[in-house]
Image (cartoon, rainbow over all chains, first blue to last red; front, side, top):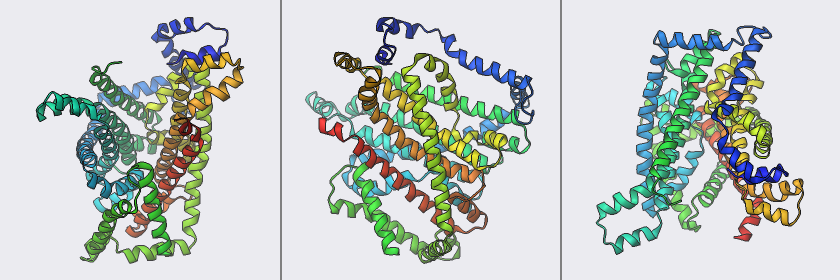
Length: 271
Length: 277
């Protein structure tokens, strides 16, 4: 955060008080706008401006959430979605790391594969859905393949950049200390490359999650996306809103945990 | 015709090679980069000849070419390309414009930041395409819904990058501004904006690729009006693999071209920075 912008634009206010005030902002104040939104939402539904098929009060969304949990429906859909995400991410990240390392270490591999890699990277994962459906049908395979495609490229790119970015002096120091290869790998290569790779995995996870939900909206027998799509066809706006909420919460949860992991793995870095 | 397309493809590949993999720019490297695609195309052609089962997935190249000619001659292709590009660009202008305005407002006015950023960050957590069922219920299968979803995708990136760019301005620059007795407008145009520009351009680059991705997504999910993914979806239903493959290639190529335009734009707008370095 830069307090400079405030002091410059808010001309008269002394910078120091700004500096002190920002961290002291109670967390509750940050939640206030969300509470206001809830109150406005409630007021609008109470005023019956919109038909209930279009806007239901927050309490009904909450009730729908509880009902979906009680019947176990939500857990089922989530389990299916997360299972697909898990397999796809594991394979996509695995291949991504492997390919990134090879491309960074071998000049030959880089020259031969880089153009194709960058061209395919630009093709939106979602555009591949129709062709995958034509080849593999609307079963599990196509959804997992879509997740793999969405995960592979960010991870491969992050790994490539990370491995290429290890500063040369690190290796020189290792040579001076005559570090064995295993130690060099464990104490230098891994700490230098893992954090940026984790950043790539975090990006990949966000994109894969969005792509998977979209794929489930298009064609699935179960999953959080299918739950929303089915609810839309049934005009169950409360269930659709629960779906949106849960999708957002899961995305948020993934993002936060990986950011935490990044920060933890970078503790050693001198600031 | 084919020669022209191949040359365009080669140029696009070369551009990507240069801008993304800044290695040696010799022709030899570029030719080596074409080896793998050429091998894959060769393997494709061989596999397509192995029998009808293979020919279904690996559509023979001459079939692909004749369906491309057919699509172009019927004039259909241009209508759909124009529709898709139109959706993407309109949304980019609307979403990106609002994003830049909101990001700026949040960065320079603390009350707006406090009031809006929790709502913004809450919205940002939901994958944009995941909002489609909700927006579909509210606004129907309409052109408006499509524009809304794609605009949201670009809005989210542009807001964040504008905000972060403006907040990253270091204190010392303001001190220079004070020494030069700049007024507020001058501080904004001469200090804040130039410093924030690289981050905003990165945002634009992401916004363009998200806009394209979201356009493909909304066209697949709201099957209304013309659009490249609409023909792709229709071809999927009719099991016309050739058309599906052509559509993917065109979507990919157009995405690549837009990305390269952004790279060129960024290079041009940031000339001054390289001159200083």
